[in-house]
Image 1: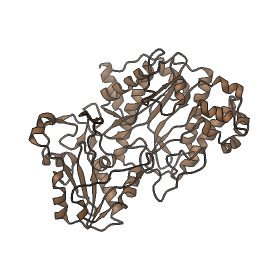
Image 2: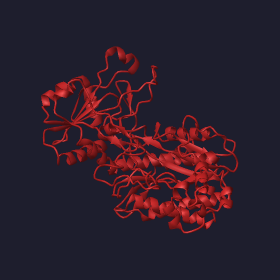
Image 3: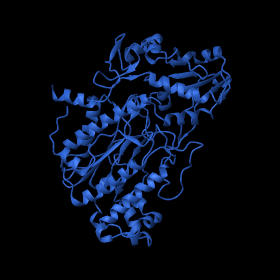
Length: 514
């Protein structure tokens, strides 16, 4: 068997959902097969449309407790967005709530659900004949109905007419704030909607809370996206060497994720840091576009996650560019690894995410004290706010369709903490079985924060300035795993080398990836 075949077999190991190839309908290629499954080819995961049907059933069950039997949910999908005033579009990605509910790939759609029966009705844009020259022949309504496993399919310009016939007692629309972005989701609208009785307060908190708990179908997709991501990271690690550029490592990741795993998208802008750039938490933006040359002796911090069938992974690896840890690199890496493992050993249903963040911070402080970088009592260090100097971000976040998935600060759950050190947390919830989260402790040497600590009369007494100077240009280390909360603990579904020994052994091997 070829190396490419071996890699693909390894990639697909442990995935047991049935696979299907891309199919052609009316000379139009689609990623949804005739039996209603999303796939990017026989070497990738096949995702059944039952995933979205189950999501709708869960939503309707919750809504039926608060609305009457003639209520309907109306959601509006995403639209193509152009590059400013040009005629070039961004690659379309479906609006997340619409994707969670229907799994539809096309833009400019609407979805309607009868709460009491769960019957689903999709509305697709009507493509005029002259546009088929550019867009190809669209599927028929019957084909859309079959592909997406819904009860009815119609054209979007008939939505008002359909609702007039249905006579809903109430239409629930989606309106609410995303607490990670501080932006408001787009509420469904069409000409004539004002003649119906509407409510935009009930749906958001219920559907967002449904998204927090993952079904077995969703978990399978997320495991696949994360396995592709981890194998792509391993490919990058094995190929990385001094004198390469950060963007070349990013390109290797993107190639593997798409070519081998069928993942066209990533969940966020790739962060490919080396050397001091590892202290820039959201490196990779337009001003710092992963463009530095990687030097011998640099630590690399690569935070990248592939997206498959709408669900994303979020994995960070940290490793020495030359494949061998120095004593200082080993010490900082092992401090972060100790924090990660302490948290993952402590997680179980009912545990406070705030408490997990504090645990990780205290373990890191303790480990830094062991190498004489810090001096004094760990609890006193934490209370003084020293942990936020070395890790300004939160321990992790909810994960799913969005990389920072919704549900962090919903009504009825703990509010955002205000105390320094924990106010950056993306959720303060008590953990529940079925949640998906990242665990991503870090340790960074960020010059303005270090200077602030050295000039602070309380913080400075914990710092050994002589040892600290040795790390001034170190950059940073982050270790980020993807986990599910289980009945008794966690499932860590992030298969990458994690110990110093595993990383050095892996990086000593020849790269055989396609």
